[in-house]
Length: 165
Image 1 (tube, rainbow, N blue to C red):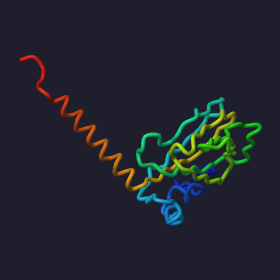
Image 2 (cartoon, rainbow, N blue to C red):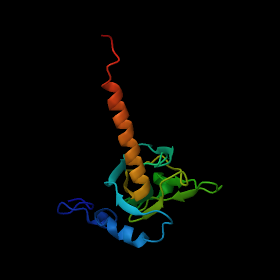
Image 3 (cartoon, one colour):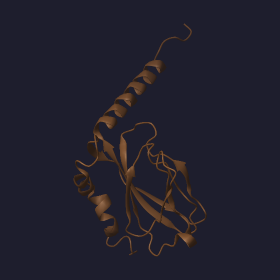
Image 4 (cartoon, rainbow, N blue to C red):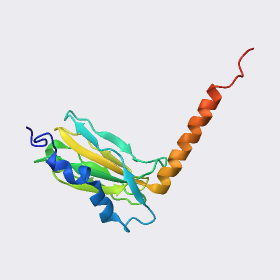
């Protein structure tokens, strides 16, 4: 068994992924007007170490409900000077850049919206991260309603009888 998976389980990932309620309870009352009511499935990212990175982006640019990004790193003996792979966060309205080493057992939490554009610099060693996004109840409900309206409009347009008779 690998270091990450023993007996069909991933003990190193248990806290942030298998028990996300712990994070939610810990954040209660500390997130301003947000009401966390759920999360995405965990996304596991593996950069193969051939110089790949991820371009600057915002996780939730269009109000899909994600309000908090949680990233858990699984990289033992990581040296960013050798391996690259830094996560860079560009906080909105500030001239500083946060350079985050993706070191083993680090849990990083930040806002998912335009307040935190970020990128992954090219990685020259295999780099692992697990990401989970937490939803705000109101924004998620609005996003689902908008999606349902758009789907209904599209379906209505495709079933019209405006063709030749």
